[in-house]
Length: 99
Image (cartoon, rainbow, N blue to C red):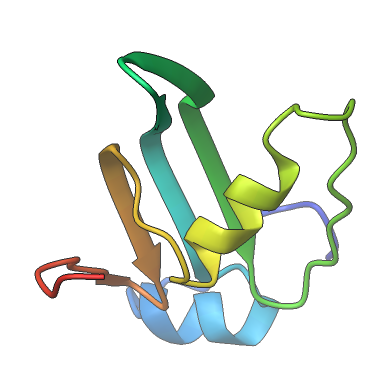
């Protein structure tokens, strides 16, 4: 039934997640991004938490300069966060290589 977590008693949570599309495809945990402008830091994202599950469609809305493109660049691994963790399909993205 849609909207309810029906436990069939099998204990196979991973299979259940795959069936109902509730597997997290993208997850951001406490993501911050600050750009340096001269000697001053300009925060673009401050403590963003986001979870997008399989099959979900999202819309990103906000004012000009609100961090929409920065958020999408971090999700697409084009940019790296100043702080926080990014997970794609359950795997933590490591930013160990230089830009």
